[in-house]
Structure formats: C-alpha cells, structure tokens
Image (tube, rainbow, N blue to C red):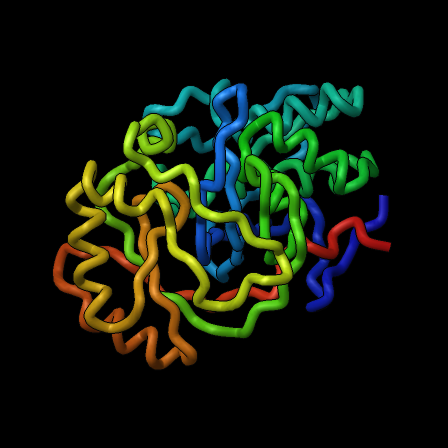
Amino acid sequence: MSNQKNLDGHLWDWDSHWPAPAKLNLFLHVVGRRADGYHLLQTLFRFVDHGDVLQFSPRADSEIVLSSPLPGVPPDTDLTVRAARLLQAEAGCSQGVTITLEKRLPMGGGLGGGSSDAATVLLALNHLWGLGLPRERLQALGLTLGADVPIFIFGRNAFAEGVGETFTPVELPPVWYVVLEPPVQVPTADIFRTPHLRRDSPAIAAHDWQPGFGGNDLEAVAAELYPDVAEYIGWLSAFAHVRMTGSGACVFAEFERRDEAEAVLAQLPHGMRGWAARGLPSHPLAELGAP
C-alpha cells in the first residue's frame, strides 16, 4: 500500500495525527417533517481549523480497541469504535486497530465532534487498511452512524438538505470565528421533540443562499431550556451577530480578521470558555483517496 500526500504535502500514514475538525452551521432551518418523524432541514456546513485528533496503530489481531475511552461512554457504543467495526464488516476486513482519541471538542456542543471522529475513522482506515471504498460508499455507511457523519466524509463546505445528507458544495470566504462553549450538553433529541419548535421555515434553493442568510430555528428552544446558552449569546452579541451551531450548546460569531477575533476572545469573562479558529476551504482529508 502506498502512502498518500495531501495538497499541503503531508504524508498520511500510521504515524499521522489525523484531524477531525469541528463544523459550524451558518444557518439551520427546519422546513418540514417526514411521515417517519424525521425533520427536514436546510443548513450551511462550514469546517473550521479546530477539532479532535486521532491516531491509529496496527494490531496483530482483528480487534478494535479504543485506548482512551471517554468518561461515561462505554467503548462499544463510542462512534469511533462503531465506525471501525462497521468498515470491517462492510469490507470483509480482518485487520485490527488501536485508536487513540485526543478529545478537544465538547460533547453535546453542536460542533459535530463525535460525527467528525467517526468520519475520520472511516476515511483513515479505508486508506490505512488499503480497502479502496469510494467516498460515496463511506458517506452511506456514515449516515447509519449519525446524520452529521456524511458531511465530514463529503469534505466540502456545503449547503445541505433532507435530513442533512444531500450536499451542494459552496465556496466560502477565509473568515475567522469566535466560538464559545456554554457549560452544558444539549441532547439533540430534546430540542427536536419540543412542541413549539418551528418546523415550517420556507425552503430555498441552494444557489439562492447568501452569506448572512437565515438563522437557527433550534436556537430559541435551546436558549429557553438551557439559560447558559442564552447567557453566552448575550455576551458575544455585544461584538457581532451571534448564532448557535447545530442543536447547541455552542455559539459563534464571524470576523474578517484573526486579530479581531482574538481581541474579542481576550475580553472573555473569567469562567467562560471559548476559542478562535479560521474557516477552512475544505476538510483537511478532502483529497484523501482522490486520484
């Protein structure tokens, strides 16, 4: 098996630190609901240069081992382990792996951390195990793990529709974001089952999206159920327009330059947690497996 370099010249191999970047939802509208209860969404996914990091070590057996289990998450239910086992089964692969996860993104934050981890596992092991599954097949596998997994495998900033699995690539400017992490975990299911959640936002065509369009239909519900979310929105709103990402809890604001973002972050009150990151033109593994 040959190793592969990305566009920056990085050699992806067993010794690599594999990125699992966060995503932001630049807008998120609930435009309907299917007969099976799934909500129909429209959103704009943006990758940012901040996230979890994974490493993979080959094994002499076929076991999938997570060397750094998350507190309160049994390894068998962890998305990284489930993704690796799913790929094994799909490809009829008998190779094993030890996965090391450096968790930098909060759980229940709306940044797609677990989904991004699972996507990186699928992309990395497809490459390291020499399986050669096409990216479209990996996206289909990822969808069985969670609705946000496919966008990280798709690898481009994109307008998304359906339950979040139909993508139209979008070119986005190289801006910076301040992202704040309220000290709560927001279960997505709790937000979507709330009776007064708006479910009738007008749908738009992908080509009609413009920067600054729309809001997050889940934000009002999350801020009502979790006062910390409302508090963080209020503080950041003094500097720029603020939106919540995903179903929360994290909130963000956009800035043209790094120094602007860092100046806001420098004023963060004691006890509040946040960070600044640049928006990425694509996922760091977008070219992995490309001819």
